[in-house]
Length: 114
Image 1: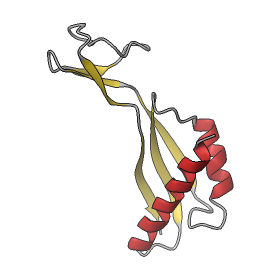
Image 2: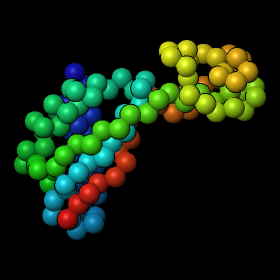
Image 3: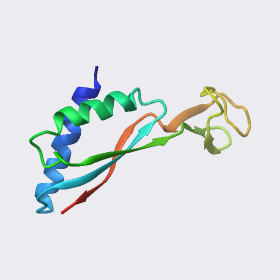
């Protein structure tokens, strides 16, 4: 379960950001999970609950939002959401000359601290 290592890195980043901003505790951790990131939101929440103990995130809430897959077409330049699980065709011109430009990552969006 790679969510444990993801949460470990997430908490490390949160600690660094809190220290840099002279915050005593973190109230909310806002993350965005891409549809194709391979991160299971339920396992992430579970791992966060376990690993946050003893950190500045100990009483923090993990707020998860989701990002659909976004395709960018190299042929026509269109940028749009993939339809269903079709990640190989441009939603506009149907060209197969596309790449996933968003939705395959997990991002730390912001922290609420005090």
